[in-house]
Structures are given as structure tokens and as C-alpha cells.
Length: 295
Image (tube, rainbow, N blue to C red; front, top):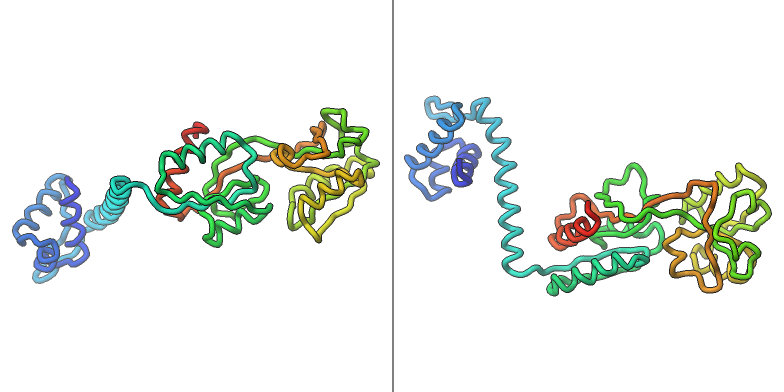
């Protein structure tokens, strides 16, 4: 069996007419008949039922036709991919990210740019919750976000990158600032400042766990809903808050972060993309990331 024979079969299955199929393929009708016969001999099954002035697929031919389309599509995609490489990888790849908190990811993107200088790699920093929307709208090809931002209904390709958790953030003058970790019970008299539910739903879930442990007070800021607003209040010593641990690596001027001892606030930093995105540069970047993370 050859790809040429599969193409002959495909055209004949579509036209159900030897004369038309031969004309489309620019071959003689005897040549087409011979190739179909060779396929039938190889698989020991009649693929077409021949009646007076009528041609139809047999049950075996229907099965063969279904698989033939799948194989020919894969061959077409392979040829397109190789032609794309031969011409020199080019195109545009847009990455939406909460921030580049990881040197390992930074290195992957830098190396990708060196390997594929003709690909225009564009980085967009997004707020929490906006990475997913960027991909859904088609503005972004790939996103770096936190696992708690997704819902079970989201239909994304997902690659886990880093295991993380939430941390308590306090001013560097706070009595707890010298500690490396803190228990929930020790927070019962603290004033909390959190983002609104629509911005950080996972924090509200964590808050419910903390509430169950004591009389922790809270203040939720909905407008303006930004981490910078929260940070200003923490720096002033007015409140303490929760931050995803990656953000504590770049947002802690005048503040320190503490581990939470007795509440599971774990999540993952993940790479996401729409499963139906066939942008060739996306596939190249995914290959590099998966290789780097052993996925």
C-alpha cells in the first residue's frame, strides 16, 4: 500500500466513477483499476461493488474509506509541516502571561527566540483571569497562568509547570515579619485585605477555610481590584493579605511573605493553549517546553 494508492482510492470513493476519477488524477482508467485491484488483493477484501453503470463502496470499503481519510490528512499535515521547516520557521506567536516569575521559563523563551529568529514572539502581561480570556478570544496563542483560574468546563491543553501555594504577606515591620511561617490560629486578630471574588475566586475558598478556624476579620476590595492596591495597604501596615507564591518573588518591596502552616493552599503554575489552535510556532514552543520539563 502506498500513499499514491490511497489517493487513487480516495478520489474514486468520492466520485464513484472510474472515468471521472481517472480524469481528476490525470491517469488512465486501466491504471486506476489496476491500483484499486492491488489494494483489494493486499487486504483480501472487495472495496467497491460493481454493478451495471453503478459503483458503490462495500462495507469493507466504507471502513477503508474512513481510515484512508485519516491517514491522508495526517500525510497532508506532515508535508505542510516539513515544507514550513524548509522555508524557514516564521510566523507570530503571542504569549499571554501573568508575569515571568520563573528564570527557567525566561530561558526557554530566550532560547526559542534564538532557535527561530524569524518567528515574531510577542509577550503580553495580563491580570489574573485575563490570560484565559485572551486565548478564548484568539488574541493569544499560549498562556501562563495559575491552575485555580480554570474551571472543569474549560477545554484547554494543559501542561503543569511548577507546584506552588499561597503565602501570607505582611509589612516588614509587622510582628510576624521575622517568622518563616504562621498558623491560621495566629491570624485570628489580623485585618485581611483581599481581592474581590471575581478577581481571585480561590482566595475566597481559602478564606472560608480560615473563617472556620477562628474569628479572622476581612476587608474585600472590589474597586480598584488590583494587587498594587493591596500591596500599598500592606506596606502601610493597615492589613495583611494572601499572595500566590510566585508573585511574592517580585512584589515585596517593604513586605515579607510567610508560609501557611495548617491550610492546604497548593496550586500549579500551568501552560495552557486552545486544543484547536494549529499555529505552527505554538507547536514548536510546546515541544521545547515539554522537552525542558520532561513531559
